[in-house]
Image (cartoon, rainbow, N blue to C red; front, side):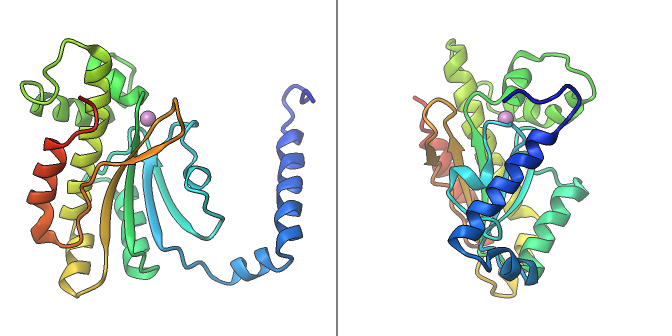
Length: 220
Ligand code: CO
């Protein structure tokens, strides 16, 4: 079915079908959910339309608290991301924060090639800083695909460390709240999520987890 020009009626039609399908399985689903949310996970992912958070981990509405931005960056002055994290950890008491990057990330590619895109260059500057930090080491390869894949992985590991260094994570650990921070990477070509094994559940473990994850990147 082709939608009318300028009309988004097809989205409303899709939505009614979706809601009806869920109600068929559980007539009280939306009523129960409207009363409260108790997600166990905060997902920090890329805005890329090919990486829909709930779908790829098979979670329903109410199960995943989500923040997405270009190239899944956790910037220490980004009030938006920090507010999502603080609400998730302090109020919702999520037990896991998942930073999920993906191979073939346009933001990573732009940072690697030093493309000029516009305003977003300033956002992607954070990625270029990471690229420069590892240029002589992990990213020293003549193969542009390997360089891109490695930077996608290294970026996730760096962002996991950034999550752990926030006052939000540190305060949670200091008061004894159970909180694990994880780094995953998603393959656009196979739909599979891989663990970058950088899981941290206490601030003191950040350096060790960071070093061992960088030493064991998936991309050769
Ligand atoms: Co991306």
